[in-house]
Image (cartoon, rainbow, N blue to C red; front, top):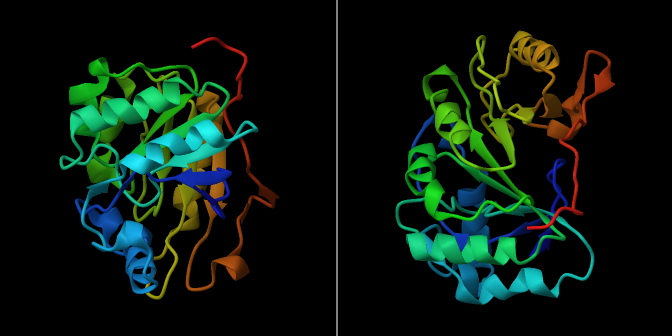
Length: 241
């Protein structure tokens, strides 16, 4: 586990690592860059760099957390990658099911695989399921997400590299928007962000603006319309699994 600087979570947990590129949002993958650094540092978990790997020992970690956490699952991978066996996905879900005191945020670009296996998974109340949608051509991922039994469904529109004018937000609980950062970030048009925020407001969907991005994301900040948007779905850890 690791404390996270990601604005919409508290910490990360990576029972799998590694991935490969499937759409334009992957072009400057942060996890791939970080994996190379961790490999160079001699971190055992990343000895194979960005090859997809499962980590049996990591399955025990959430049982050791004493206080309730909000956890981003697989910040360094994609749980629904084709190379992650279904049986291992089920084991990850079992860990989440057995730790109802924590919120687990799972995010994937592989919405088709998510849909293929979703009925074989137990969707306890504390599992938030999201898909990444960086531009119009991958908007179909939302339809696959909508079919799952996740109690909280969210969209990560990051890095936002194109307009999303007609989002279908039916049964979506949360939308995160962020611009690309790094050495050669693709620009994000402010009008795209404002249009999404207005769609969320009209649909009564929680809206979280993560960052403008750019080469210096601290300098560009995360203020929109003169304010900071930190909306999130209500966290209720009192429900039974």
